[in-house]
Length: 410
Ligand code: PA5
Image 1 (tube, protein in one colour):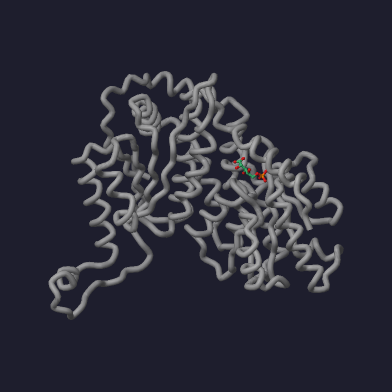
Image 2: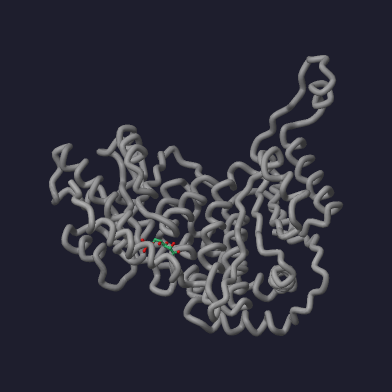
């Protein structure tokens, strides 16, 4: 992946030594495990074993929320090659759940329940619904192990207890790897293998790239620029890949950036607001704001050089605008919109960083994932906050249960 900078910070007084010190300290901490575990073959074996036992299923249903769903959704949208159908039960929306269950061939589906904590209400609720559906179809508790796989922290928790009780295979979410950093653990690797994605390449390439990236000037520069711009009021971060296949990547990034960097620091509120986008579609939507609105945004624009297919725009129409397209391909038009936008952003003084991928595959996607995971972690350390916790969402959970206790229920 090539990283090209076009940023307009007034001064960049962030010493490279400070960024390097944060990187070195981070590499020594247990939180660096989201990189170290990429080298742990046990996680790959856990997934390949499950795949061997369930290779005849036609539908894979992931049940999880937040980091237990967004990463897997992004992997599947970007790289899916197999014919297996995928569903993500990532909300407690009644009508959507009913609609999905009507479509799913339950008997030939594998239900993958993922919760790092093992106690997330939304996820356990969906587990209850699926078991009811199976019981309606005549299955019993003894059959659950043939329809479910779980993944959770190795410590004792509700999900692991259920797995033990019903002899359901339970994969490990590595202890020091939090939800939003867990896409390249069994959380995302199991659905990936069913999608025909090469998970060995994904992990081994991500591991070697992480080491190269952390030692590179480009990465140190990226961190310095993000922080220097933030100090000058650039507190919104746009991610805009020019590829429909990377649209879910933007939503994965939103959680990573928002939940990691939006924190209270000694009473002061800090954070960079992520804005998801995708080109060229968003040129007819958010781009006007990015071009002429407040200069408080840093944009990451992702361009993919090669696509798998070519579609010619050749046509026999004499209408001038159609005729003008005649000698080009659809990809030429996408490229024109991308590079035209870069030029216009430069003219407007909008800071942006262009990430260039040769093509979308296991190697490039793993680079993109590692780039944003490491950028999030080091930016958090530069801002002197903990990028790995999420205390701000606890109160809402407590009050939700308080509310449930106050109503009658069924
Ligand atoms: O990043 C995180 O830690 C969170 O967004 C979690 O992924 C989310 O809350 C789901 O938690 P769990 O996997 O424990 O069910």
